[in-house]
Image (tube, rainbow, N blue to C red):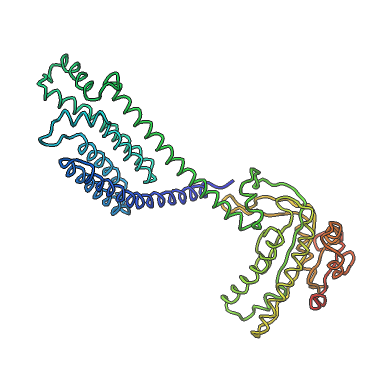
Length: 459
């Protein structure tokens, strides 16, 4: 399983990406808010009465300034604190701009409009909805909490203001509450049974909106986190598997870290005489050579649906039939070996025009049972195949030098490829039998077929 250190690193990267999205959300919310507030300000110029235009436009300008402050300080270490403080300030501006009576106007008439049409409540709901653009659950919750406090505060302030205007003794609690009920019964109209029901309805609605919007933002952030994690896993898999297998493995429920035995065809390829070929060359040129060689070999492996197991210096190991065996694994492995030979021949034509020596490769292919799984230390795992089949394929690749061959394949591999119908007589005739060969480190000999270098030149 991945180590705690690896998990912590992945979590840190995920948090960084979420912070970047939240940072981008602030910039998007700033532009959106400017457009919305500008629209409201223009609308007020035509729809509001002359006495309210100054208050409304002034509130819009104040909120534009606060939005700019959040945007300007979005990279500051105190960006979150500034954003939350500005949220409270915006809610206060909306509340004051909505419920404070116009100097000289009839208070009762204005309050009837505010409470009867639920103006403050609707403005706060719009502002709460807009807070989702910040992509921050914290901002949504703070906005909702500030809106709840603003609703209760506006209710209390209006009650006290009206009681004072009607000469009710605020110290006499026995008289205050019945008077307040009478006042709000007139202000909110007959649509609500009691002032308590009116207030509770708004508070419950605002709380539910806060919860739903916060939940939506949280779910969006969680989905982004899962998407980023899945993409990281897919990129990791792409380092080991051919592209046509990555999507299936990324969504698989199997635990591929657990070892399991299966049938597979193993292929080894390396450069013959690599040390001599690179003798006297600067290190950077050696690295460039290996990059080109590895890229060509990997393209052949992926083109034939194989799995790139590992790079081993100037060699490459690939498997066909991992993680799941297919009926044509042997055919694809042998066709991949032929493709590698052709790719190197094409590479050599370009090298010869530049006066560079030709490159010769040796390929060994063998089929049999392998043990697949993640091997290594907890901090560095590698999905690989191990077992006798792997060892034999590696030995066959080394035998190519002794037989002046480009490809050495076991008889089991060639027979399985021919029997599957995908490797016909035209392809198989290029291989000639060598007979039983004693493979170093193995007691039983292996029947092998080789494709000589002369055959490669003829092709």
